[in-house]
Image 1 (cartoon, rainbow, N blue to C red):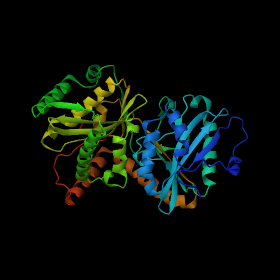
Image 2: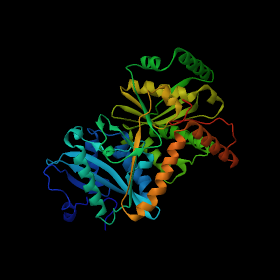
Image 3: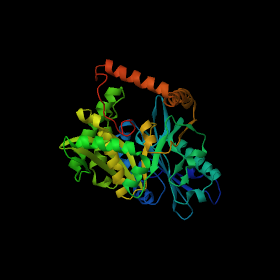
Length: 423
């Protein structure tokens, strides 16, 4: 019986399904993470991937969330004839009603889902060869009773993985309901800020910051200890939870394992180079907080919030965002990535949205029964989110329903974060 961290599934009868081509990559499928940890960690240092495909992010997700929800990792490693890794596909199977679906590992909390690619992958593996690699991958998974699936649901796939085209987009895809946003950084905060914001906007920003300073010294702080990071995260969770309640959005921190996941990321020495926790203080009060990721020359703006108290009207979220961009520039990062979500404030910093894509395919009759409603729901969601009037009406209705439930009173100021409009 396979365990959660068993050896790779490389049975001879599975290998027999591979084509005889000398160029065909060698495939190994792992149903756990520990057996591939060393190779994964080494590969991610040179591979084209996003922060959401790092071993630390996904192993923490599986430990705290995936394992609680019957998620089985399906980590596919493709190697060339010399044994060098060409790509890693971080997949998983999970329950979907009475069926199982093949997804990206950690897909719920990954703003981008993609493979890890060798720097020369696109030069060595063309579309036809990747299609064959994908077919062999599916065959190997389906031939093992523990990894069988009824439907494929691959979501939030970017067009490119760093500089390379995303090979997953050679599959049939449809647009994801939301796009993503990122902007190149300049060599100095002053140059970047002046290029992105008008003189009148900069003047208004200075006025608000000066008014904040009337309540105490304004300080941007990156906590130096795990205890300090956890304190900032606790404030973030409190502020963000209040925002979710005010908008009628399910609180992700209330889901089993989610808070533990973020607490580990914020405090573990292993994630110190990946996770950046920060806070904006006015005097002794934390008025804004953030958990971001730094990886591959990018700053990922993942979770942020600000107070819903009397200082909310003075824009602490915007001040914090400015300081985060300054921090990223000082760390010589080249891209500030707002990740997924079509919130209008992102257009003040970015040239426009980049699309994300989804791939849905049916493998069995069970998959067919769950795929149809899933596709219908996705099309409706995209229609609502891409139509400003419909999205505004939906958001107001959701907030009104939350107010009626007694969780918060309408009209009360709310915290905002990455993916919200206030900054």
